[in-house]
Length: 265
Ligand code: NAD
Image (cartoon, rainbow, N blue to C red):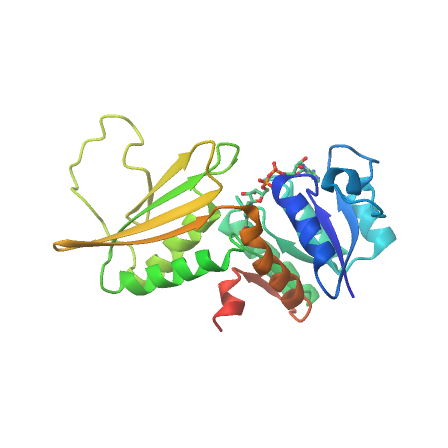
């Protein structure tokens, strides 16, 4: 049995993760950590009776007392960093879905995990369709290097652009390098109209109620455009990838950034 703790257990992704772990074969949900509803039974929040897990606000104590194999983190930027540090200190393998970390921070954790020979996963997007979108976009960029990314999320999202958009831009940049696009002398009449600039590629972030997680990669060529689009229409879309990550992290001895590195080996 893989013993799992969920950090951010009462959040949108945290609740979905708890339910997925409870249903998964070979996994046991042993703990749930959040800063809200401390001391209350997790079951009442999930609508599940007879669940022997209580919400704690102390991740360190949870690690010491329950000795989990894996901690799933869906908290928020600024919190996740301390949680990963703590997990690696206690030899608990972190499977991190929280986005918003810098590449320097990821590199820092890569060094710690390698030093401790502990498996760890940081995954900006657990939806397998989104990983395919990134793969196909990078392939298409060989022939269509002019690219813009539009990502669309619910309006409670804390970071922009999304981790998926950054991952996509990185994958495309690995293929085409830094490349200036559009008119060099273009005038932005409203600041930000052209979106964020990643190595010459523009990224636009839409935040509206009604969306879950969506992205379009538009590639432009002479007389044609190619659009690759992925839609997560419910948070269940992330669960098969998350459970795969929990299983895979058990046999890793270093940190892997992006589930695609385990899926498309
Ligand atoms: P949310 O706000 O619904 O949930 C966050 C939860 O973390 C809340 O319940 C909050 O109380 C809790 N929390 C805050 N500080 C905490 C702390 N110090 N310790 C423990 N818990 C704490 O957010 P969400 O929509 O569930 O998203 C969470 C993160 O997951 C975001 O960074 C989001 O971008 C990311 N996300 C990733 C994927 C993916 O596939 N990797 C998919 C969707 C969302």
